[in-house]
Length: 151
Image (cartoon, rainbow, N blue to C red; front, top):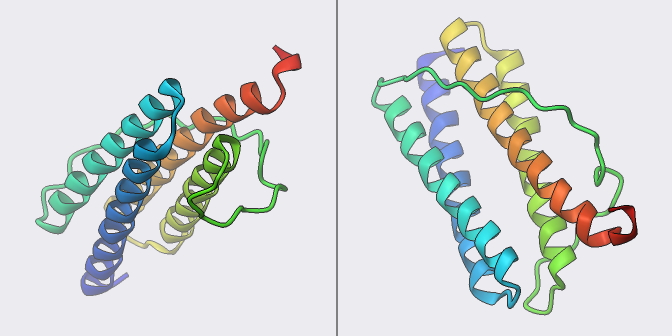
């Protein structure tokens, strides 16, 4: 992958992190449930840190990231993605957030597969692991809310 292509991809990833940050902050401001508010504020803060990391990557300051690969149980993969609306129920908001994390993880996984540089591949693999970790965390919450009889 050419350096300028890598730079464009990272710039797009930064835009995506900013979009996710804005989404999570706006959801946190709208939800009434205190636990959900905390979860979405935490996710917004994570996205802010990811943006900062990616900005450092653009500047050539690549730190080694270490995100443990998590098992993806694909709990919500077959459920259709809801439309964003002000009238969303908490479960729909969670599902939309899960889908955003899934799409991001898939994008980074594809980019890792297309990378010829080991350094670039490592960056993309770790970003994918990070997004998969968010997805798993959100799916745990979703499962507990959607299927309370299971716990």
